[in-house]
Length: 263
Image 1 (cartoon, one colour):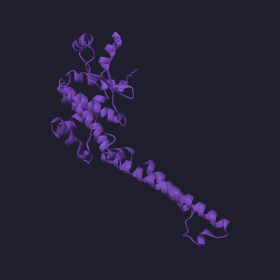
Image 2 (cartoon, rainbow, N blue to C red; image 1 turned 120 degrees about the horizontal axis):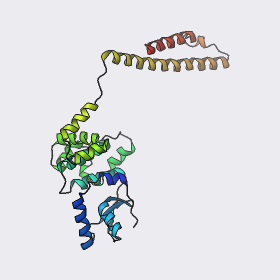
Image 3 (tube, rainbow, N blue to C red; image 1 turned 180 degrees about the vertical axis):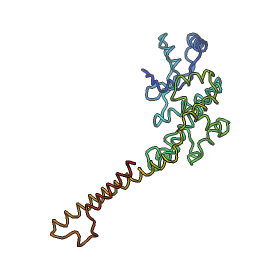
Image 4 (spheres, rainbow, N blue to C red; image 1 turned 45 degrees about the horizontal axis):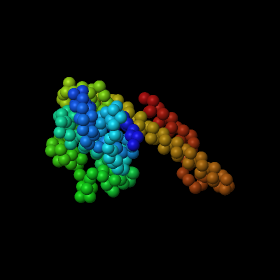
C-alpha cells in the first residue's frame, strides 16, 4: 500500500530521540515491525518512524486502516492515542490535553443548526463516545475525568496549547523543557488586548450607532422614492396616502449622521 505523509498529522506526534530512533531501527531489523502502522484515507496517522525505517531498508510492514467521519475525528484520536503512551513527559501531556480540550470545546460549542452541531448530536464527529456519553457535558470536566487531572489543569493546558500552536519554535523549547508552563501563560497575558480608554470607547459607540442610523435612513430614502414612483405610475399622489416625508428632510438627517461619524 502506498501510504502518504500528511505533515499536519506528523507534526502532532511526539518525536523520538536519536537513541530511541536507533533502538527502534535495530528492533525492526531483527524482529520485524511488531506494531501495525495506522492509516486513514491512505495517510499515516501513527507509525511515521516505523514507516520511514521500513522504506529505508525496503521492508514490508503491516497497515491497519482506521475509519473516521472527518479530520477532526482523526485529530482527536491522535491526541488520545498520544496521551496513552507511557513515556510521555509532563510537558508533552500538557500539550496534548490542551489540544484535545480546544478541539472538543470547539465542537461542543458548534452553533445549533450547523453541520457540526448535527454531527455532534448523532455522535458522528467522535466515534469514541458511547451512546451514554452523547448528552452535553462540560468539556474540561470530561477530559479531567478521562486523564485523572483537575478541570483547572485542563483549561490551563488549553491556553498553553493555543500559544504553542502559533509558535513552533516556542513549542519545541517547551517540549524540551527549556521553558516552563508559567512562562508560557505569561506570554499569553502579554498578548491580551490593552483596554480602550473611556473617551475612545464612547467615540467608537457613537460612530457605530451613526453608521446604523445612516443605513436605516438610506433604506427609508430608497423606500420613499420607490413608493412615489409607484403612486405616480398609477396616477395617484403619494402625499395623500402617507405622511409628508420629504427628500430634503431625509438628506438633512443623513448629513447629521455623517457629521457625528466624522467626529
